[in-house]
Length: 281
Ligand SMILES: Nc1nc(=O)c2c([nH]1)NC[C@@H]1CN(c3ccc(C(=O)N[C@@H](CCC(=O)O)C(=O)O)cc3)C=[N+]21
Image (tube, rainbow, N blue to C red; front, top):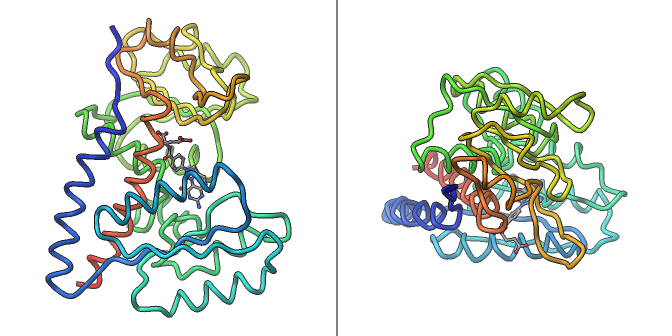
C-alpha cells in the first residue's frame, strides 16, 4: 500500500510553527508584510491568491492584495513595485504568474528589490541559489523540501529525477536539491526514453504540465513520487501530472492532487516572508 504525503496536514503543522514565530515578532513590534500583485482575471490565479490570503491571515501576516486591470501598463506596474520597495511595512513582494502579454515578466521580476523578491525569481536570487549562497528561493521547491523533511525523507545520497525545467519549479527544485546533497538528474518533455530515466529515481518530482502523464511504468518500485501538476481532466476535475491510481500500486509514498504540493507551495511562500521579517528584528 502506498502512503500519502499529505501536504494539507504538513501545511497545518507548518502554520502552527509560523503563528508562534509571528507572535514572537509581534512582541517586538514587527508584523510580517506580504504584497501580492495580481494582474487580470485568470481563474486559476484567483483560486491560488484566495488560498494565499486565507493562510497568510491565519498565521498573522499583513497580507495586501493589489488587483490590477488586465490592460494595465507596464509603467504602472513598475511604479507600484517601486512604491512597495520603499514601504517599510512590506517584507515580501510577488507578482502572480502568468502576466498579460504587454507585461515583460522578467523586467517586472527584476524591478522588485532583491531582498523583497519573495518568489526568488530575480536574476540575483537565481544566481544565489545556483552558487549555494543564501537568498530568497521559489515557493514550490521550498515547500517540497519542507514536505520531505516533515516526513523524514532525506534527499542526501538519493538519486532525484526532476521532470520539468520551468523557472518556477523544475530549475529551482534542482538547485535546492543539489544544495541538499542529492544527486540530481533533470529531464523534460524532450528527453528521449524518459521512462528508462525516471525508473532510476529514488525520488521522482514531476512538473511537466500534462495530465496523468506519469504512469506506473515510469516509476521505480518503492520510490517516492512528488506530483507538482495542476491540470483539469475532461470532466473538469483537478488532476496532477501523475496517474495516481496506477502509480500508487508501485510507489511507497505519493502526493495527492489536490492536497499535496499546492498547500506546501503556500507554506514555502509564508516561510520566506517570515524569514524576511525576522531579519528586521
Ligand atoms: N509568482 C508566482 N508565485 C507562485 O508561487 C505561483 C505563481 N506565481 N503562479 C502559479 C503557481 C501555482 N501556485 C499554487 C498555489 C496554491 C495552490 C493551491 O492552493 N492548491 C490547492 C487547491 C487547488 C484548487 O482547488 O484548484 C491544492 O493543491 O490542494 C496551487 C498552486 C502558486 N504559483
